[in-house]
Length: 520
Image (tube, rainbow, N blue to C red; front, top):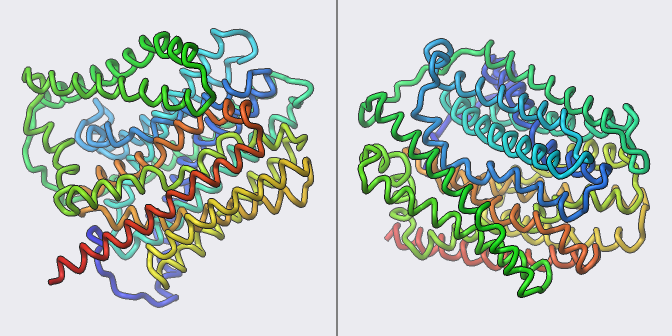
């Protein structure tokens, strides 16, 4: 690995004492805060919208609100450089941005809670805006917590801090997943008898859970670092950098939404199924990205931003990656990163709707998927970490790719049998164990690709890329199910995992060749 430091092995007694280190304990609560938002965009929101009578294809489109996680690398450098007026002087650089992100998350959840999606198209628009704000704020919080964790303590504590962070994150997911479903059912909303007030009160309760993160942020100390910036920039330079980012983001959004009518007409004219529509939407997305890229190039050419600052912010981390691996290997690795999780994410977007369509109740889904499934996922992650340490990351990466594709077929049996509770637990067990194992190996793989000089930005790029295409495809999962049914969809999610197995083999082979060449 290029980003890690060697540390001396520690005894169990010392390790146990360090579990009580304030830095380690604080990551448990920050992890909880980071785990709350995601399921309030995905599964819990999906069930709310479905109960409100929203069409299945529209429900899955809402998963695109979480694309902020896939683009966090764009503004990660800004979070690293820009001070927050007043707050940075009071709390410090990391805690100031953490507080802003957490307030944004709570505000977005409340905005969604006070919106009844069944009251008309305008309400769906407000719900979408709240979901987008939630995704953006949550991704920002992730950026800051990752940076805080790295800077807050010595290398010997990093593994323990990561472990408590992941544990807190999973607990947060249980609360916002199973907890939200239990509360909505307790407050009186069911698939047959929708109650907006039940869901409103549930989301208000979820907003209140963010107090855990807010209190933690105000209680912890700002990391003390010896980091020295390569160049000192003026407040005007920072303001220009922020302005260029905002103009670029607006260009992307304006291009995407203003061209929506054109691409809708193209889809209507060409016809085809959900896959054709997905490819057309990819072109739609590429057009918006292209417009944003042209905007950045034009603004930099006109001198709207300090060129040295722009180069350090966005260009150098990318240039370093391609310089270390070369074009051939770098593009192969990027393809693997972008597609490795396509099978499980595409399936996960619609899984809760699938369970409800089969006839399972919210408490059954909450118990099996959001509680039992989460703990199985944690077990899969631990197993993946142990196996990767013992047998090597690439071997377990291959094992993860194979079993994720294979275990998706268990859902075919569930779709054929119907609301069978033992089979539901079997499907959830297989899916979460495979996903946890694959994710642990994949995180280790991504970490091994980063350079210590650009850890935060490069990791943000990798973690963003790994969810981009899967989430875009997941947005069409409802349309695909409408076209080919649940059985066909689950077979499809298994088949799209087969090329990933080939990519893992090619990447492992190429990395071995490159390593041999460098050692000569």
